[in-house]
Length: 278
Length: 221
Image 1 (cartoon, rainbow over the protein chains, first blue to last red):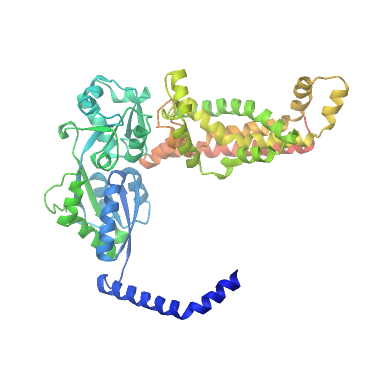
Image 2 (tube, one colour):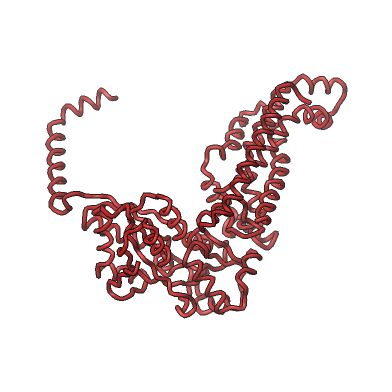
């Protein structure tokens, strides 16, 4: 079989060589025309709620710049711990402000690089359709068996969910946890998945997730019920000299990117409100 | 913290009892049968050795959910599904630790050979009597090894619990999950206590295994 293929290959080889050469030439020229002098790769650690949006932004960015973006997602707390202990990321897109600020204080992130890229919105999701109006009522009255949320200790959206329960219901959060009525997920994506598979009646998730997901219903929780989820991005020291990392952060501030982020269900704070107090 | 430790030990105890109840007849069948299905069944039992725990966790999440026939039946029977409950973790642990229990018992039954059972038969003992008064006592070192391994393996389970646990104190928050949470939340002091405890525990288990192994080589007690 090898011999036959080899013989056939020999017969058509002049064409193959020419075509290959042309393709090679074409691709080299294309890269040279559109890409930067040197394409680099940036590793981006992202809070789970923003993962879907980031994938889209990264796709556009890679087309636009020729740089490569590698995405890792998890809870903000988990990624923070990993970064603090040397995880090889160049950029950190957190779901809060405290952890990026802490990384700057510890010298792990570049001072002055922190800025708010989105303000997240919390929703209460249920996989049963047609519940929108009743979800708030159900939550308040405790008409549910189990509720899924990200672990409040390590995930800002989990903390926001805890605040909502404490603010608008008479239920004690620690009682609910002790009674097994709160399913604590490792991150917000897992919380969503617990409710999607029917293991929990409802889940606190991000608006961006239910917007891209399918089925079910959700209640957008008024932002007076929880502290604003301001999501900060920061350049990590490891990525300080990485052209892909710095270009990506600039791209994240671009007006077109910001309107794309808005389209996924995030609010934006004032244009380029870069935080520099650290 | 004590609640977590107690829960983990409880999970390991309950799982070990079920593992021995299921594993012993299975190992007996595997060591005696001439069926063509023998190696197929042995391979299925051994699957968790190779499969990532996440595969098991993923399938259990779906299988125990309200949409599946199994989860639906559990819901009709108990009024709730089994995932994110202690019972669900027991099911997961049994599947996950089964090879660690079946293999040593099967080896013990095989090492015994057909001799003792035939001798007992000629003395007029019935099949059940032979199994309980000849086979089981002879296989005791294998059974002990199996119990220790099943217990220890369940104590250290993480991946499956991560996917079908939900981190509920007193119900599904076992040691490995608690350690993971403490590390992620930077509460390293607590993580240290539990982790050091696990190191000591694992050392004791391995030592016990070696002692039992030596006894096994010397012949059944």
